[in-house]
Image 1 (tube, rainbow, N blue to C red):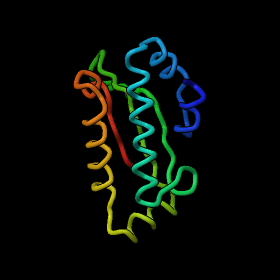
Image 2: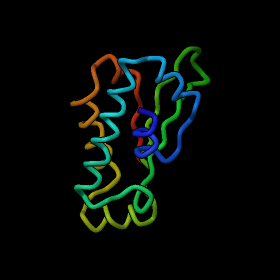
Image 3: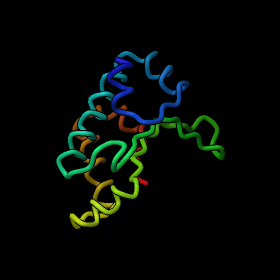
Image 4: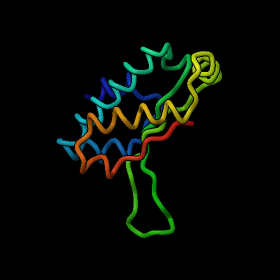
Length: 119
């Protein structure tokens, strides 16, 4: 499973991954989501390391004790920005598509614990 994850994510926060591995029902759903993200990105002509990167970490709200979320961040590289612009897509449309994928794949309870970002 970690091998699959390393192919889907360019930057991994190991504390977050250890936390995911300790939740055997959550980790496969996250992997499936990441695979679907890659499939979607490929369909619109974007490829990892050439056009985008994916990071997984834990977002912690310092102002509210106990609030933290799994954060999945898609970072568009220079070539990625050019490609989506050429296709008439902006970051918000891309985010909307990724959130839609998350809605279809991730169970409702897990969706409440995940933040999806596009930078």
